[in-house]
Length: 244
Ligand code: G3P
Ligand code: CA
View (spheres, rainbow, N blue to C red):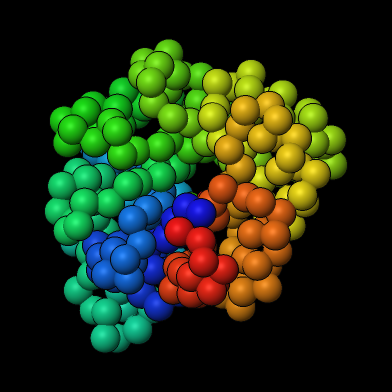
C-alpha cells in the first residue's frame, strides 16, 4: 500500500514546504506528493495554486513573479505563526535536500507544455528517475512527458464525471499511464478489479482529514495506494491490517 503524503504531512504542517515533506518522512513514509508551478523567469516552484494568495503572505499569480520574488514570500504564516519563515521550495530543493531521500509523485499544475522538459531535466540532474512518478489532471501533458521520457511512470489523475469505468481505463491506457487515479469517492471494488485486469495500478486521491473510514474502504476495494493529508492515520490503518 503506497502511503503518499499529499503536499507532505499537510494536515499538520504548511503544505508543499520542506517542513511538511520532512515531517512526512520522519513518520517513516517513503512517498511524497507535490505540485509544480512556474515563475515568470521559468523556474519550477512547489506550489498548488496558480496564485500565491492562499498559501503565502503575497498576492497574485505565481507565473507573474520572479523566482526571487516567490522565494521572498512566507509560506508558513497562512497556517500558523509558529510556521513563520517557511519558504516556497524550488523543485530542485525537494529533489536534493530531503533526508531520507523520498520517492516523489510530481503533479504538473503549470499551464501549457513548455516547462515539461525542465521538469525532466531537473529529475535527471538529481538522478531521481527511478524514484519519480509524474501525474496530471491536464491529461494531454502525459503523452508529452512520455515522448520525452518513455520510461517515466505516469499517473492519470481523473475526474470521473459520469464516465463508465471502462472508458476511464481506456483513457488511462491510451495516455500511456501505468496508474489510474480517480477521486476516492469514484472508486469501488469493481473499478479496482477492472483496472488490475487491464494491467493498471490504482491510486486514490481526495483523502483529506477525518477520512479514516474512507481510507479503510479504499483498502477494502484493493487500491494500490493513496495520496493523503494524514499519512500518520493511513500508516496506522495499514499496520493494523498487517500490510506494508
Ligand atoms: O494526488 C492527486 C491530488 O494531489 C489531486 O488534488 O488538488 O491536491 O492537486 P490536488
Ligand atoms: Ca496535487
